[in-house]
Image (cartoon, rainbow, N blue to C red; front, side, top):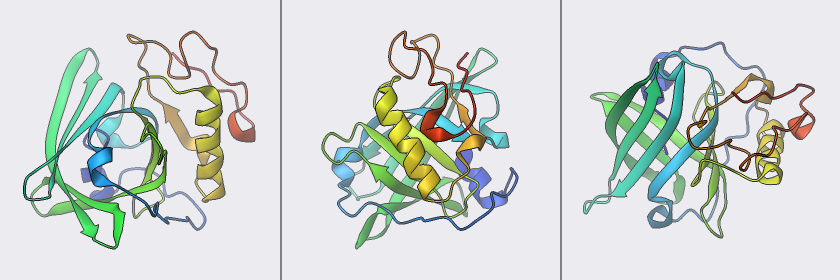
Length: 196
């Protein structure tokens, strides 16, 4: 679930610094085998390597040596983009913290901050920097109540949820559940969310 090419951006910067202290505590009961498979990016902070990207997904496959193969896909101006990389568990005692590499000598933190521990159906992902945040789901849609709960969790952790961009999966349906309209004010953010 490492969103498209963003991991390079984690290392070299690319968007305005978010202010305040961020709680980067990862989930305790992370099971890497259950995290494998395809995830869809529903929301993210803006940064150059995913700018204008739509229909973004990430697929994770556990390798025999314990590393994780990562394949990120998305569309940009009607063209398919794919990048492949590798992830590893950073610390056996903190399995929710991964290090991901797409290019030699450049690796980035990939932290599972919130996770559906029952079904592994949604996740809130951060990095070592407050400039990167993603809301991910196993489906291209997410119930509004679940999405709003993830927004509240991100806000409580110190993230600027007003800076989130909502990823267009319009060829597959709206992200907040079929034909449901977008929330007028998710998590009390004081703004209107518009999906295209």
